[in-house]
Image (cartoon, rainbow over the protein chains, first blue to last red):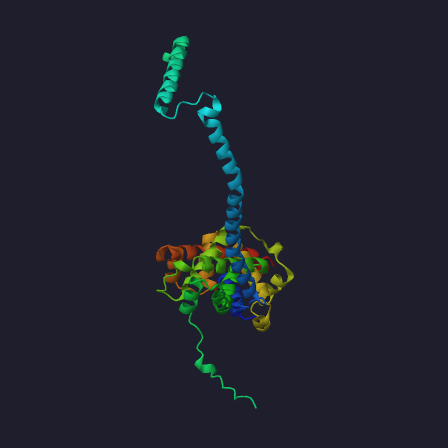
Amino acid sequence: MKPSGNKNMKESEDILRKMLTETREIPVDHVPYAFEKRIMAHIEAAPQAAINLWQQWSQALWRAVVPCLAVMILVAVLDSPEAAAPQPQPAPSAPLTAQTQTTDEDLEAIVMLAIETPTLDR
Amino acid sequence: MGSPVEPVNNSAVAEPTDKELIAEVLSGQTASFEPLVVKYQPRVFAIARRYARRENEVEDIVQTVFLKAFSKLSSYKGTAPFEHWLMRTATYTCYDFLRKHQRNREWNATDLSDEENDWFENLGEESHAHTNQEAARALVDKLLDELKPEDRHIITLLELERKSIREIADLTGLSESNVKVKAHRAREKMRKSVDRLNPEKYL
């Protein structure tokens, strides 16, 4: 005959308590061999990756210098009024007169365009 | 004859404290972090194994904890011991893991392995003290699988980590009474799950 204590023992609360106690008793703090090396390898690789990223960015910037300079010079050359429409060089003594003349011509062209295109003044 | 070698007094060479190691790491000596990892990794593994079952998951959690600790080391104020700060980081990381790997599976008696069935059958016998603890752990995992991540987190801290209600409230940001209520409900749910899983009930 089984003692009545056995029945009580099988009460779900007791069973749960026993389960939890046995689970707690299992040693869980063992560490895989040389695990700290794995951590340190990750830590040392992370700043390296960041440095590599800056290096790549810096190299890309240096590589872009020559094309940027080339584009800059090309734009400067094409944008200059002398290159767009070669005009007779004004006398070095009267540079202001030549500039005023060009501005007057431009203004005249704009006014003419406005008169010819009625939608512009709306 | 060579010059006599001076004896090295090992006791005089004091190991650097956590604060000294942390200061070295923050000044750029990354290698000084390794003694901290060696010192605290058993504790972090112990916490991680309460939350994850597979060993590769446990290792991933521990790795995440230490990488987080390293990257946020400058935020450690030094008012509390480094161990507390690290364990808090470990607990948060484990909770994140629970939320991402939410199982919410309901187990039945037919899902039990032979070892788990044996564990129930041998209850109350003298030899039970020496039965398979791993079976008990697997059963507890099954019970915890049925809980919501927050409840599982609270039960793990309370029943397996043996934290006090105040410590759990501090870690979870809940009030102490809220922790008590949630723990009571979660335990009640676990107790009902034991009833459902216990094959002895159906004999």
